[in-house]
Length: 117
Image (cartoon, rainbow, N blue to C red):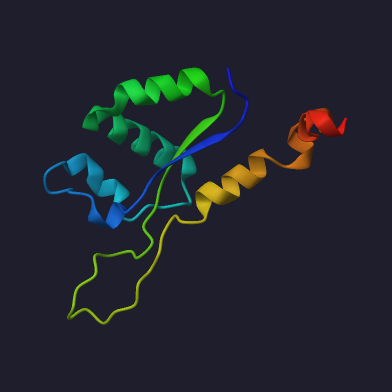
């Protein structure tokens, strides 16, 4: 099993077809304050959309898998919509990965390339 943390990110959540798949509605504007709920919602959405085999495979291969959702714009672009874009959830996967890969979270030997030891 691989001990490298894996962030699985559902992108473009503002474009999810929540009218066809109502369970995707909660992912359209991800709330980063409840990361556990978001993790569960993203994982379940992938499974309900037919990706359950992929979810199982990732979780079998990686010890630490976390699911995220984000939107870079916060809404679908429209010619007559002059309102500003409002990204959501974009930084959470990166911050989580940085937290997982902090120097204190792994033995020093694992961070030094074999040829440098």
